[in-house]
Amino acid sequence: MSTRVLYDNARLLDPASNLDIKGQLLTKDNLIVALGEKVDLKGTDATVIDCKGHCLAPGLIDMRVFVGIPGADYRDTIHNTGEAAAYGGVTTVCVQPVTSPIIDDMARVEYLMSRARDAAVNFIALPAATRNLGGEQMTEIGLMSQAGVKAFTDGNVSIADASLMTRILKYMKHFDALLIQHLADPSLSSGGCMNAGELATRLGLPGIPTEAETIMLERDLRLLRKIGTRYHAAQITCQDSIEVMKTAKDNGMNVTAGVSVAHLALNEFAIEDYRTFAKVSPPLRAEEDRVAVVEALRNGIIDVIVSSHDPEDPESKRVPFEQAEAGVIGLETMLPVTLEMFHNGQMKLLDILRKMTVNPARILGLDSGVLKEGAPADLCLFDLDVPWRIDPEKLPSITKNTPFDGKPVQGRVLRTVVGGETVFEYKG
Image (cartoon, rainbow, N blue to C red):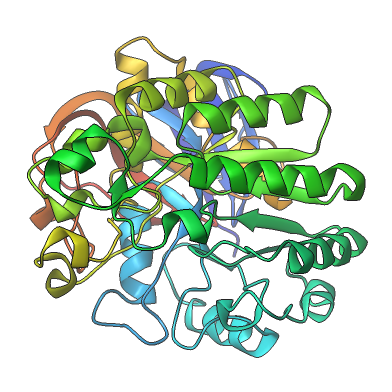
């Protein structure tokens, strides 16, 4: 027996088609079969869910998520990551290869995906581009591409060797694969723990200059000019990098970029009291860089918003700042924190959702991220206006290392649907 569900009295939001209407959406099993102001049920019964005028959008797609499995299940598990994603309206998570052992061959990809089979949301494993993230030897990109892998990344490690990067880009071009690069020149970033500048000097902490990011980006784009491989800058955090990316796009290069919610909402002063729960990689930048990043998101230079969800256990955070691990949780709070840009008039609602739905879907070659007939029934129902305060103890992540502890936000996920099935419903 097929299962039909009618989402009634919804504000339908589809960034791919600029749809924003009050209407209905009908799913059958795991697909969307109809949507519009009024859906014809053709005499067939359907379970009706009253959306009460709230926003119904495609499920969010998060291109940058770190998990503890395998090797660090004390931080989180596949099951727990799925719960955290569903709580935040995220229906697809892209898992970074930074695990133990490193996800750098097809057997380990298959192992992770087998563990994720019963998770609440969709998991996509992004294997490493270099063996053991060592930056010395290329992984079996061809074999993994032929097995269906579409994107590769060394996670939170940059591919620093220019000769190796050139070989990787040429090889990926042959398979139309996507390279996702973390931007941090190791000769400039090694040993640093926060943004370089006056604040770092005052706090007595070693800094990481923005040049570490921009130099790596400029090098990669220079290599890409004659190769043409699809390339995605995982996170852009400063004005100089934005200018480099804009030039590349103006010249027609096939490049995209992302930014984390933390870099949109916070600047370096979030760590002024040596607050390790705001230590991230790349580090939070100066306020002028944060403003530039928001503007780049608004005008399309930056294509994607990510949570950069990276849970760390309390023992790795409750130490002196320089020794603390970089990483924060973010799946649960990505949407409400990002909606701040809508409520303060910086961006239109559809434009914000576009950065977390159809844009990452197109970059990754997915058929999700849209509301249309035949698309996967991956949905996010949210109340746009309800105010609440982030309480890490109420979030499903095992670790509670959020930089938004106590932050007042406006907008809450009410229901998350994956493959036509409700995997999260807010109970109040």
